Image (cartoon, rainbow, N blue to C red; front, side):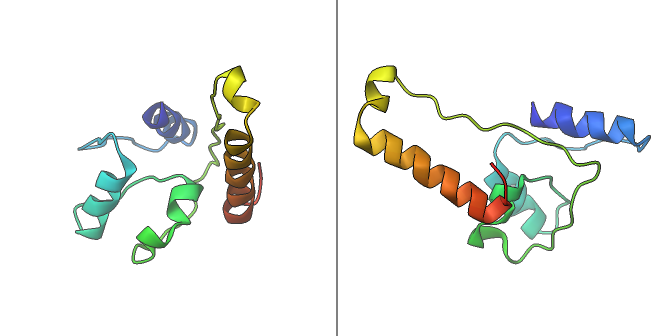
Length: 100
């Protein structure tokens, strides 16, 4: 899904999109970029972690948005721990990215 969003953004801006390598996980893409093997596209939440402070980042334009979901059994949502986990995740996203 993410690669489709990025490809669509390239098409909308009439820029050429010809990736040489696609990986499934952000940590692999980040490692390759850190090793100088290319560039990667990462979501703001991933970029905001302390893990990627050595990589310079620039905003990707046009802005591309995704929606994050928490999926849980209705029975589990009645329990305090899953509700608190979701609340904490929302607060962390708001703090790092600035919107929920």
